[in-house]
Length: 306
Ligand code: FPP
Image 1 (cartoon, helix red, strand yellow):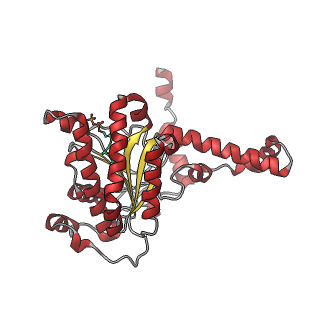
Image 2 (cartoon, protein in one colour; image 1 turned 120 degrees about the vertical axis):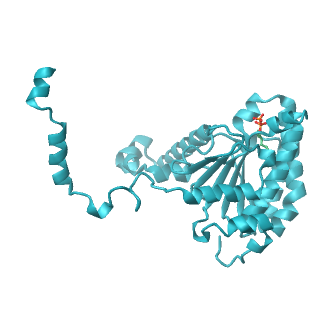
Image 3 (cartoon, protein in one colour; image 1 turned 180 degrees about the horizontal axis):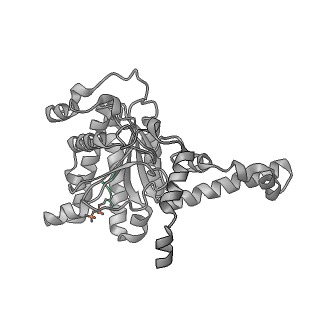
């Protein structure tokens, strides 16, 4: 996000502002991804039909997006409709979710523009009903020039199928290259393509190639699962689970999750300043090897006991 975007923190509610003031503005995550769960339970608790929970969930989406845009969060990705939802939910519920998505987009594009929010999508969106796809395209085109938060809706999304699509894409590119060069795929593999296959090759072939990996994943409704969401991309993300059901989730709760995230120590598999041993005072490997060998080799007494 360009640094030139003016601060909109003053647009937060007084409650949000007081929480925001406790945050370190230099450590706002670049990318927050949310598994929005609990719409059905929210409705059930009120003896309402499930679809009313989804409707209320769509309201939460807009509140959270607007808070995200006010704090200049560059990337917000919401798990709105999974491949599994599409395959395993009753047709009537799927059809309602599609209608809700369409009316959400139509009803909120103006607010997205007022908030400088750009809309994008990931998932097998080409399998969604064509009229939904048309509205999605209209919404992304209508907000394409915005430079604030990019709101990405994961729709008909599954992480494993995303990885399958990525592998298909890599293999298709390889076949095309072989065809162009007039040689076989084996020739290309033998000429170093296999050695050239790195993590970046996979990342670049995922739907999310253009985004940074999520720093923070939030899941509502207390379930401690990832549910096939961005499996590759969240390798080092911090995970925040709240019991709050999605229809009750607001911008304030996004800020609470960010406050919790800022208290975490991210290590990416390494050591940090607060580790017991400081990196620059670690023993040289050669000394350590001797020490470990001595520690691990059994004494003659231990050997006779075996
Ligand atoms: C999980 O609740 C949520 C979904 C399956 C869909 C998420 C959809 C929305 C938040 C509303 C529409 C979104 C947009 C962008 C317009 P659940 O039904 O699994 O809840 P439960 O586990 O309590 O039954």
